[in-house]
Image (cartoon, rainbow, N blue to C red):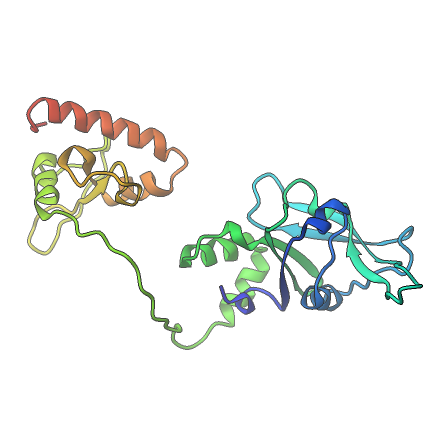
Length: 252
């Protein structure tokens, strides 16, 4: 992920066992720079700390935390300089040792994100952008120019059985196999209705590439099964339909 797309300044650090055990997170140099750019310096007295509202991104049930920021005094005999720390409210119950935590700023706003919670695909960037304030989204979109950058990527693809796909389309008889779907289909250049063949148990989860494990769905139902709030319920409904059709000899 290119964090420069999203933030003015940023730093990523792996949360340590000490960060959790001491109830005090120690930001690294890049993270301290982001806090400084947002106008926050650690208070010299831990009893009178600087308070920072940190916006937590893409963490269910947590929108923000109010955390302290201070210099912790350490052993003068050992010659150890005071250490900048963020208080226990930042780590709370949502971070654990081994998590990678991004701290960043946009202007005077500070953001936190567990980077390991994001899958490595472009949808992650879109989710992150959508989670930022509206004015940030509009400003950064207006500043965009030129062609999109390219990257070379390798991926594993499954070689699906073309007869399973063809048989599923025949079984569907030009209609979406999602029960109660009434969406109108558009047609291909050859005049046939456009349907997408979906594996009910994903191939990536070792689902079989068989007629009993696929359904011909309209694009809307297909996207909703993958990304909708009721995808699991819809999968169960279409699986029951396909099972009944298969038991009846494969004809609707």
